[in-house]
Length: 198
Image (cartoon, rainbow, N blue to C red; front, top):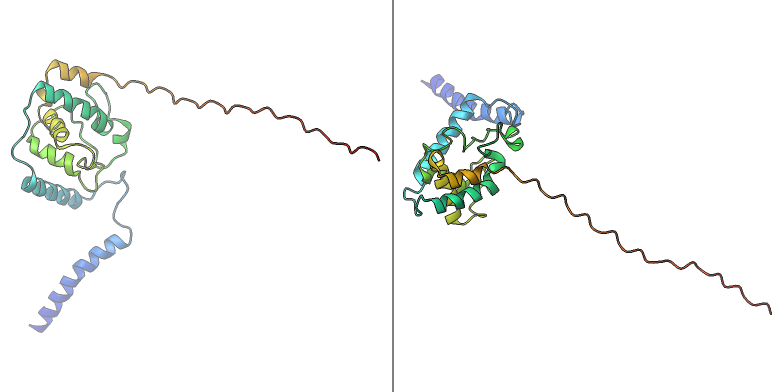
C-alpha cells in the first residue's frame, strides 16, 4: 500500500510541475501567428460560455427599433468596424488580419444573430481576456452598449436606412494640417563699434 501512496503523491506533484515547466521554458505559443493548442481553444471556449451564460442580462431594456439600430450603427462604425469589418468590405480589416483569435465578421453571414442580445452586451461591456476584444464599459454608456448589441443581434433583418449607414465607405481622412512656419524675426546685422582715437 505504501508504494502505491508514494506513486500517487509523485504523480499528483508531477502535474503542476509539468505545467510550470511547459510555461516557464517558453514552450507555450504566445504570438498571434501561432496555432493554438487544441486544449487551449477548448478550455477558453468552455470558460467564456460558462461565464457569459451565468452573468449575461436576460432582459433587453431598450426596444429593437430603427432609431436604436441607427444609433447602434454609428457606435459600430466608430468602435467596432476597425476589427469586425463593414458589410461592403471584401476582406477583413488590416487590424483583424494580425489578431488572434481572429475577430468574427459581425455584419457578414450570420455574425452573432443567433446569440441573444444579452450575450453580445456582456462581451461589449466586459471584453474577452486574451483576445483583442476590449471592455467598453469604461468608454460607452449602458444605452450605447445595448444599441450596438441589438444591432448585432438583428443584423440579418436591418431596415434599409440602417444598412445604408453601414454600407457607407470610410471617408478619407483629411491630411493633418501643417502648422505654419514661425514668423522670422528680422535680425539686424551687428555693428562694430570702433573706439574713437585719443
